Image (cartoon, rainbow, N blue to C red; front, side):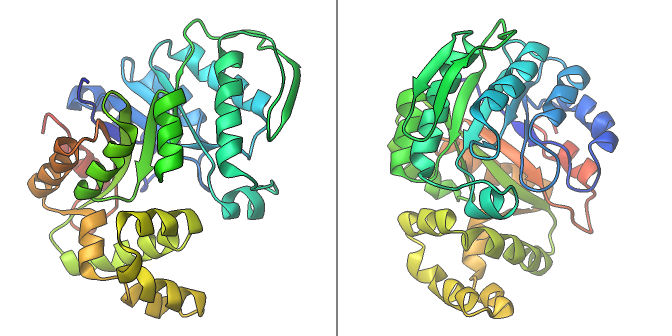
Length: 319
């Protein structure tokens, strides 16, 4: 598979409107991909629609949009719109997300996440191909939906997948798998589940800084927020970090956030967050690739030493 090198857009230190110049620079720096995210900041589609015009030729992807915060038809319409703006270079990344995002923030229902993701994938395959869909799925029913203007080139669909069952679904029915918060060594375990020939994508959090203590303090806050979410807790249990992360989980469950942060060992932080000078970071990213990652999607973390703009340039393939 051709090696990809992606960047997360927009950037953490600025708005989408202020990201234009740096997004326009990505192709010249050698970045092949620009991937959005959707949590509580920008939505997953508008940045890609703008990047379709700002960075022609770059592959665009969502990593990810939840399957339970939009109806299936609306999700198909949004995907078709971006696919129309960037024919043949849009990848739709979908996933189950989490109870906090789906229920607490979007008043939805987080139920049967595996089945809902599978059903949405199967619906989108038909809808984005221009078919009229009338079908009862396990988690929803569609009656007579057809896109008014299906895209000329249906986008590839990739799944957020953290454990064997979803990883296998991504390999068998989707066009790839997206994972998150893993080490280079963990890539081998994930790759073994999806097999060869399935695109494996991962967002890598990177801080270009030689102040390891400061980076670790910042990273612990990010890690505690993610790794206490049940799906990520189960993911790292599967990866073999259950015991080393147990003190963090116990402190978090007891409501002692500071103790939870302190309980995350340095070796876990260093395994899951890329940091150091730019050359060290690029070498670490290459380890992910060497171990079976097809598409690293970099997410630069703001640091005092190196501004985001410089980090994006320093981490580029052509740096």
